[in-house]
Length: 195
Image (cartoon, rainbow, N blue to C red; front, side):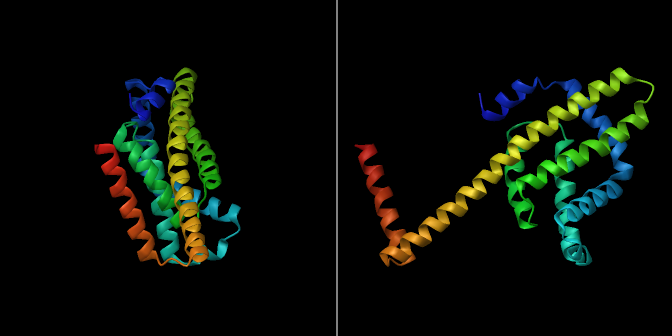
């Protein structure tokens, strides 16, 4: 059983959950630009970077990443392909200077907006509203775990790069010499394992 299947099993993900998210998507679609713009504005305001909002390119990139994040959460397809996409989303978030704490904040702001949308639609059906919010909470929690995994990959890569830079500085090795040594070591490992 792959990791994504284990996570889905922990959250008891079902076809009813997928259907509920599809319903939320249908309510969000006519308002998606407004909601994404609002989430981006709130995030920038919290981070104290209002001056960046005057940069049209940055604003487009930020809204694009928020759109990708939100539509991904509402896709309801918690399979291996989804898992891979969410891990790489961590890199795109880092490209617009959003850290994992920003994702947590974004999640809570989106939960509030989506709850308001659901309330409008299901005001006279509290049981359905409750079920829908349980589904949304499961989706957001699972999504957060996948994005965190991607953020850890980025952090690990940065640490490896810093350690390599330090190693090269201390030893005086050139990057080419280091690469050659690593390649020779790998070849040697393959020979040992093959014997």
